[in-house]
Image 1 (cartoon, rainbow, N blue to C red):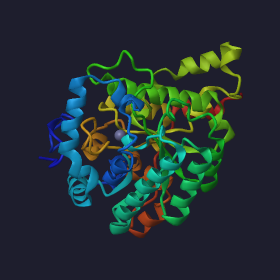
Image 2: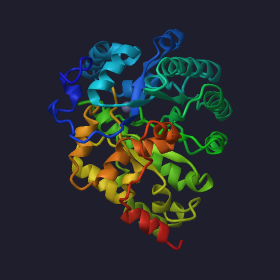
Image 3: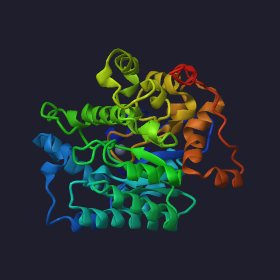
Image 4: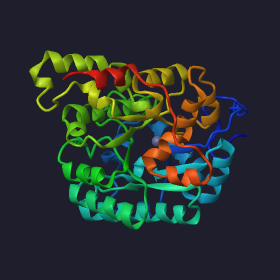
Length: 380
Ligand SMILES: [Zn+2]
């Protein structure tokens, strides 16, 4: 078995031997940790109806999730199992972040600040034990822009974290609104943002078939990215480095419609000064798309230098053969494969120097993009 921890479905439906022949340095940008102590901290106030992923689900989904959590608990909460699985996957470094179940932006701000700190201290302890295998992405209490900015600064400056993870909405509010203080701090610190959904907020029709994950997660990402673009966040803070989970949801499928509406209607360009594609081209995307043609589409749109390996470890919606998946992409040249597997992430995480000291060359991704060339060449 490729994996000792998650069940068969968690292996992405591929043969465990589908490992690429060429070994590149591999950084997993999308992998989750749970701190059980945080669940204890919120036991007295926890309200499943505040979590879209739980609210819009049927009984079979809830039972399947319960069994999955039992199955992968050691993966989520212990370092030893995680390291064994990383070795099996060929992942050299994980950029660890909280499971979205522990964002809990609906908590009152004081408790939210304390749970975020507890998440971060747990991540810091994992990194401290194995600094060559892990870097951490901070959890921040986005229910308060001030507290989120403060926690981020603490994590980056005091705990040595390399970035921050955020949700795709803040208890139903857009991440593009009321959080400029947080975005300014992210830009000032120059750190990477990993944006991850936790179900769609208005998912009344998505309760069956795990649709609030299958459809809802990419949908919430799409809505969040569209707001970041049309609310002008990426223009006001042009140096943001945002990695969008699950290949960016549906954003890659219809970007031309966004350009069209921006040109066609005044109500679509109340805040955005240049065409949407120019903001979209600043984003980064992970490889959780399950299909190489889909990855080819992302590379064509945004460039191999904007794609990063993610596994979604240890959940059953993950893909645990990053080398096999990327090496099997015949449309990629070898430097692009090296970039996607680890060198792009090293750059965003600011650990290129560490890689150089290990004799690993810096990123050399060559594939440029139609969209990004167009975006750069656009006059407006
Ligand atoms: Zn995930």
